[in-house]
Length: 137
Image 1 (cartoon, rainbow, N blue to C red):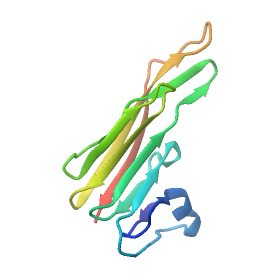
Image 2: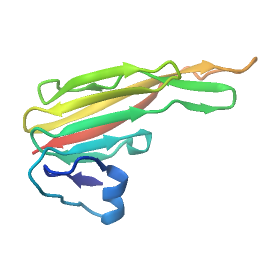
Image 3: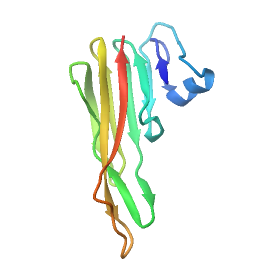
Image 4: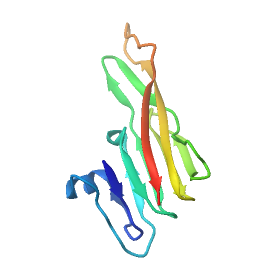
């Protein structure tokens, strides 16, 4: 699914855009937009415009005596999406904010590693990945 954002929306969640249309949604106005992304946006594509902000907030994933802890999200091309902020939280979550600097396509990614939280719990040898493609127009 591609969500199109145009300058002017203070905050726009990808889920809200999806609720408006099964295809692409368009928004227009004068100010820069913010595309807010979460765990649920994994494997999606979003479209933003130059000057827009891409905000990522990932929450830890818990279950079966383990917790998946996220690293700070990164951009595949820092010239396209410049990271303005980034942090990992003590609870295992992570957040980052990116500014769309030039036209093109890139991705924002993060990985989570498993940590046992209960006696006897075991983690798989693999890491969990999160990836969103960002098209800057």
